[in-house]
Each structure stands twice: as C-alpha cells, then as structure tokens.
Image (cartoon, helix red, strand yellow):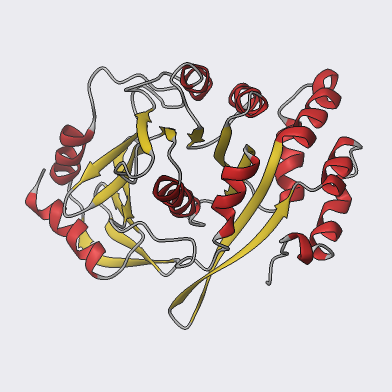
Length: 317
C-alpha cells in the first residue's frame, strides 16, 4: 500500500483515534473521543487506488455487501484494523476502525466480572447491544477472553470480519470469517452445531434467519453470545420480535422468554477528554421471563430499576 496511506494510519494510532475516514479528493478525518476532526491533508485518487488494490479481495462472497462497492475487511499494519470500503458519488472511500491489540478485561471496562460467569453457568442467548462505536466488540472480546482463561471449552466465533485475535488457553477458540469460512450467519450457526461447540459467538444478529438460528442453538443447550444494533433491553426485545411476521410473534415471544440469558446495553460518553462507559443490564429472571412471554415489554424498564438485588442496572445517564 502507498507509504503515505500507511502514515495516515500510524498518525491515527498516535493521536488515539478510533476511526480514520478517507474519501477520495477530500480531507482526511479522524474520530477522536467521539468527535470527527479534519486535517488539511487531502487523499488523492492515486492513494485511494492503492487502498482498494491492496484491500479488495478477489473471489470474496458476501451476505451483506454490494459486489462492486462495499466490503468489510480486516487489515494489519502496526496493529489491527477493521476496514469498510465503499463508494460515495462514484468516488472511493474507506473507514478504518482501529482495534487495540490488548484485549481489556471486564473490570478494565467497568463492567461486572460475573457477566462471563452468567454466560458459562446459564448458557442461553446473551446479547451485547448498542449503537455503532459503543464498544460492543471490545466487550465481546473481554467475555471471550475470560471464558477461555477459566473454562475448558471450545468457542466458535462467526465474525464479519475477524477483529481481535484470540489464543488458546484453558479453552480453545475457532475463529471463522463471513465470506471466507461461511456464507451467511445463519449457515455459520448451523454449521457450528456440528463442530463440537460449547459457546458460539455471533458477530451481529441482523435478520430473522440469523435470530432463528441463534435461538435454536441456545435451545439446544449452547451458550450463544451475540451483538445487535439497538439500545436498551426493551427496544432490543421489541426489535427482535419485529423481525418475525405476526403469525409467529407469539411463538418467538415464548422462545425469547425461555432462552434469553441477559441483555447488556452500552453507550460511550466523553467528559473532559475521558471516555466513559454507561450500561444497562437486564437479566432474565422469572419475573422478566413472564413479562416477555405475556407481551408486557413496556414494564421492562421498571423491572430493571427495581431489581438491583438481581444484578440488574439501569443507565446512569
């Protein structure tokens, strides 16, 4: 790749950026502490050609990508990146998400350490939700790391693309990438069931087919850990049910009530250049399960607020 482009990436890591935004013939932008900062330097057509030539894979099969203009790829240079290539007004663009090499612990993230214990002990469907940039992948990595260090198990991850790289510990991990190792999340989940898993990690639940497969795998007794783009347990469960036709809603409301483990919803905010994590935590107690089964989702927020003794927590802000 063009040496100048690599320098853009090095500078992004140096200033603590989370994302680097490159757009052909436009100024480079860095997202630092949640805010986008533009610099005077423009990215030339030749430099973006270099990015595309070196990044764009051949023979890649995607479930959710335009075959011409949109690709998600992992890339390494002085560290790891998740890269999205796309077009805007027929001009080449790329967004590099900087992935820190060190996998933080749940304690480092100011999250309860017993979250991973809940995954191990209760199995079921455990969800980490939030908007883009809320740190879902970082939390997922922390949970995986803790399980691998404490449980003699086999974890299979289904990712788009593979972000953090895990080594084997007490447990072993098999990391699979969408487009290279499996063709859709639904197919990847069903394949995983024949690969002796204890836990299946799903990079993102995007549609009803992957949600059906995830619930079925949880019902079979596996620990399923997945992310979704949502915010708050009530909205997340509502979104899950909205994926199914009216004729199936009652059935899947029962399935979710039975197989859900927890919903960890998180968001980041910034105070005086400091990154802070705020989270909401819903655990599927008997009361919560009955509430979901009966369709009284508007009561979930009240249950969270009144259930601190059950390790639940509402957002602070």
